[in-house]
Image (tube, helix red, strand yellow):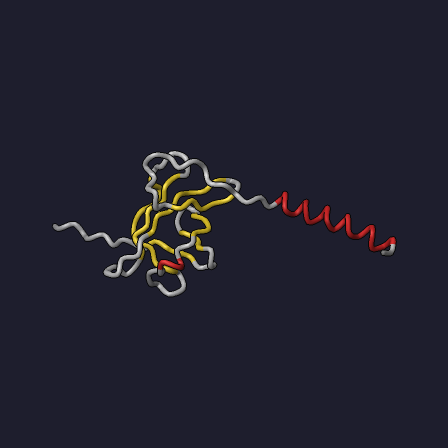
Amino acid sequence: MTTECSVKIPYMVFLVGLLAACNPTPKPPERPSGVPPAAVWAGGVDGGHWVDCKVEADKPGNPCTVYHDTTAEVVASGLFVLRSSHKAASPDQLQYDFFDGRSIYLASGDVLDPVAQEHAEPAR
């Protein structure tokens, strides 16, 4: 082994260790009471949310409920559709990455957006 190679190997090991330490895998907090067992935690080192989306054949989207990660407060609830197709996600697509306060980002890179609720005009 040359001197140049013997210097590079420890340096590379150090860099790999440093990169791994800078990108820790976030761990979900303890599930608060009020968050259903089907909900999955999605987030990062700065926090996250518990997300529970269903697949219902008779619906044009996925009924989803998003809960605050420590208080279980419902922060979003309603029908969500895939941004790419404006249709419901299939069960295998429901792998959550994070919630940004409006949309649910999926591990595949796609996004579930809330369906705008139309309000009926009040009768006069």
